[in-house]
Length: 348
Image (cartoon, rainbow, N blue to C red; front, side, top):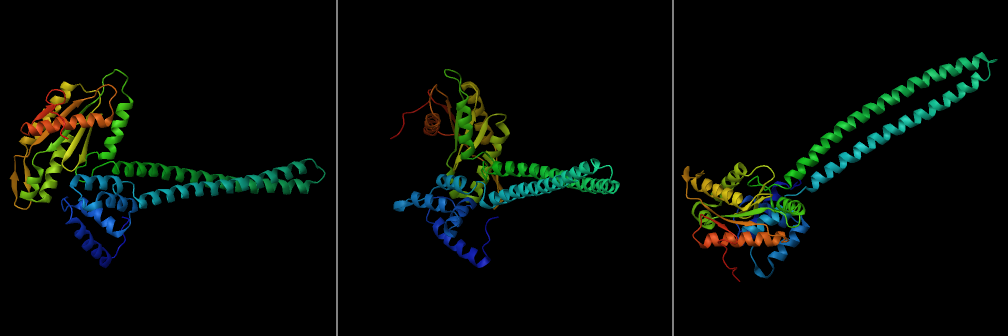
């Protein structure tokens, strides 16, 4: 961890963070605490600037804004990870450079011995010089072999460490693209998936479908059962998405209680079928309230489905799926609405 505050200092940061958290419209959950801890500790200047911009004029942060701040400024490759990776790279390069330099020095010495031997051979009348030259060659051959063995061992060790480092970089990058609460892709990962998906769409060809999902009456769930139970609901929805969204498709937490599923190469009928499966699965599920040990049902979601239109941007596609989601909410919730079929006029 990059936090090295002692108990007194961290307790003070806790007190200050709670003061800020209670003034916001977001839940008092770990993600909110992480954002405000970084803010009051002053360890994340980019986050601090973004928070101050968003709260200018007395505006309050809601859950969506809080999670977006967390994904963008905290759940990335940490400074500590970056420094550790850089240090290991520098050590690998230094070790190989040092061993190579030693082998080069030894090769130069060996070359000098060969030259002296050549000169002794040219003077056959001096057998003593020949004996000394041969001894010199033997000694330098052993030293050269040792230098080469050392270089080979260093190269093999560096190769192993480089492979480990590659795995660590991959792990850290993967963690930076995952929503901490649900285990789904985060907004950053979804943006990358959109970019890759739309870049592969041929002009006039079929594009992706997008599902926008929102948990119905989520504020009421939080108010009735508490924010910890609300987190359990978010995790349950995340598990349902992970179980039903496979392959090249991307399930992501879009922000707060809203989720997105990007379906490259999926036709509208297939996307609508998946949406109905997700809606029914979640409606049939139960979530255990650890405080009371009761199981709570009637958790439902509304889903908007949109199919890519030739030439539109990511923003356009998300906006149409969002309007379809709004239509599903307007038409009674716990239902799937398809853009262009059930889409309602945008509300100003």
